[in-house]
Image (cartoon, rainbow, N blue to C red; front, top):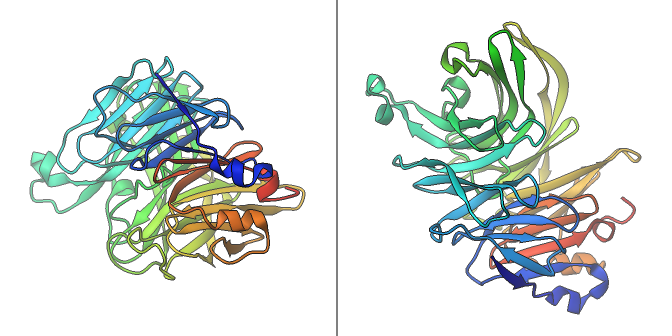
Length: 404
């Protein structure tokens, strides 16, 4: 374990802003973040880099797993200061887990299939049930009985023990690649959000229940797909049942366009995206999907869920990959930020403000100078963002959004 001292140049410029930054190396990029508290986070990125801080970025522990210096760990899920699960993107995908603060890392899943590319991982800390999704692979390459098939299915894995073991989820139309959803994006680890990841004991053993949304893009549009599924652990394939609800959103046609990040807050699903090759495009939009409470029945299993009923399109100041929203119950206001390679947008009262504009507010002027951010996440009183060139930054919420 190595200690890395933070280079707090923003504190020198505006000390009252309480903004911390660490510049690890100019070549490292961070796309995974897991926030434990106002002062404690894990971050993951390129060149096999894993960071941890417990003091708001004054110093960092470097916890890189040995033998994986060439891996790009694009998503991370931490349970506490000792336990974390990391996921690599690209060929030869791996999922690793540590239970001793990075002293050792155990390989809990590996996949060497041609074309494998994991995009996102989510685990419910209360139940230990989790899911990992990756870009679709052709059925014909891996199933001899389907050698004439032209269909592709998104790679889907589940865990019931906080990531100690991973198993495939049966395929169906729920994870079928289509013209509007043919790929996901591993830009921020936020292309999957869930209502429920749980297990239930029954007369047949243990039943797994999942209710989640995943998103991406295709040749004709972007799509959010809600999936509700259930299966018994003793026989997943025969007991497997599901419902699937696609919800399409307008983007320019072509590969690379679509939804890159989401956050679920109360009865609203916030979606951001665009195209990573075109950071300044005006063809990027944010979408706020309104959800309504509903009950579903899968044979004998009843699930309380939320279904998309409408959406609002908001302007977006270029490509955005990560979003972090909150809700003020007193003012009934949704607020937060979205981040991307060309800058940061602020959301408030269903309006978008670009930090690339010349603002009177000194804090917003400082935000306008921050580029190359990939993802973001709230703690109770702060917002953390990570990005390219070793950027790990903390903002105090009271200064970003006074009075919230």
